[in-house]
Every structure is written in C-alpha cells, then in structure tokens.
View 1 (cartoon, rainbow, N blue to C red):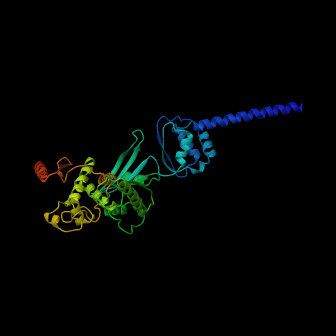
View 2: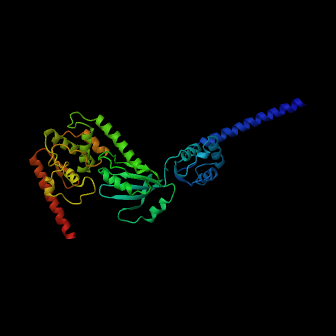
Length: 389
C-alpha cells in the first residue's frame, strides 16, 4: 500500500512540476511576446510611483495584457527597483521586456514636453515643445524672447514638471560672447564661467542639458565637439589649399559662415576666398570689418560706413593681407567642410543677387555688372517700401 501511495505522490509531484514549468514557460513567452498596443504612447511615471501603479497604467493604456506578469518579469530580471520617473515613449507592439528596459534604463525623458533655449546670431528665444506621437515630431506650444517678453504660463507650467526635458540650441555663426551671455540667462544651469572661450572653438549644435548642469560643463561639451569636427575635417582636406593649419581653416570657415546662409553656396564662397588667397588678393569681406568693430560683442545693427572700411583693425580684410588673426564667429560643420573642400572655380568676386544668394564672377567687368544689377534691385526695393512707410 505504501508503495502505491509513494508512487501516486511521485506521479503527482511530476505532474505539478510539469504544470509549473508550463506556467513559467507561458509567463516567459507572454513577457517577451509582441504587445497589444497598436500605437505608440507617452508613459509618464511620477516620482516614487510603484511598479504596481506603473503596471496598471500600462494595462489601462492597452499596451500590456497582464500587470502581474509584467511585475513578475521585472522582478525576475532584477529591474523592479530601477524604475525611473519621467516620460517614456513606448513604441507600438512593444514587449513587456522592452517596456521594462525603457522605463528603467535612465537618461533623459524620451517624450513629453521639452524647453529649448535657442541662441541665435541676432536674438535668443525660449521655445516650449511637445512631442506629437502620431506625427513623430515636436510641436511648438509657446515661444518668447526672454530679453523682451514675460514668460508665458505654458513655460511656467512645464518648468514645474519633473519630466520636462531641456535643450540648448546654438545657431551657426554665433560668437563666443553671445553664447556665454545667453548661457548666463538660462536658469536651469548653474555656476560661473571663468573666461570667454576662444572664438570659433564652440560647435553650433543642439545640446541636451539637465537641471543643475554647470555652464562650464556645457561649454566644455561644445568645445570637445568642435575639436573633433575640426580634426576630422582637416584630416580629410583637399590638396593644394592655401591654408597652413587647422586654425587657418577655422578662421576661413567662420568667414564663409558669416557671408552666406544659403547651404548650396558655401563651397562656392569658399572657392572665392581661397582663389583670392592663392593670388595674393585681399579678402575684402564686410563681416570681418564688423567683427573688428564689435569683437563679437553684440550686433552692429547698421550698415558699414566708408570710413570703417578703411579703418585699420586686425580683422579688417580691406586693409590687412590674408586671413585675420582669429575666427569671427563659431562656424558649423557645413562651413568647416566647405573650407577644406571648396568648389573648383575661377571665381574671385561675388555680390548679393536679390534672391538671398549671390552672383559670382571671374572678372572685374562681370562683377561690376553684377553690382550694378544689385544696385537696381536695391533701388526698386526701396521704392516699393516707401509708400508702406
């Protein structure tokens, strides 16, 4: 009899083990299976939220099938205690395993609202944007000039949220002084800047920052990014450039940056200046004169006077030979690449053509004709504006 009882017990245990193994296998398969969410969502996790609360949020949003299996899977993977407050973009049909990874890996929020501090050449702007999940892009909710306008309510609200992202966006052609002055006004940053970075050494780009980051650390990131960009461009430079080192390349790139805002023109503008350098001609470019007057501290805000074109400064390329001693702004990647890979032309002149771009010429006669055409366009524009004024 005892043998029968023992045999039955063993059989029962075997069955239970198989059943338990089947349940575990089913749970693992469910945890790693494609989720039911047929559209991406932005999951906002409050500070201190429990995994039970989060799993119920996910179930309510329709992106997981079982809160219990989600919690068990997170426990088994050792990630239950790693959940992070913030806003996290959950892709459509994400598995529970993938969702667990997304909400525990840390870093900046991947959806929700962000504040962008835009530092431009003539002004700065603060922009509040929110991710439109369906469109897959950020949509502007508010924008204001901090130097002239009060912060709107939309800005105040998102500043109070713990999952708001922050970004500093630097426009190509800004000077180091402009960048430093703008960073001083960004209240999510801390600390002083001991010195003004050398002109041209900061990479114009978009940088994600967090509350409490130091201004010095942001400057250092810009400096490191520019060093990498400059080294890479100089290493891949074309043969026969009239530039002796990477610093001269950076100076020329800054002039190209200030001379044209038309992307397709940069290599042509580069060819003009490099052809002039090869022929021993003065560069005669107005942005260098302006920098000699302002030294990058603000915008001139008016046209150049004839006397200023003759005034001797280290940057006045109507007076000096060759390149000025320093860059006149912080050039972006495209202008740096144009400086080391100019278009192959015989151009030595260019002037505005009335369309936002420039007319290029190889001879003084062609250039004078282009200038005369531009003067007519200027006169017509002035006549058209007079009645409105």
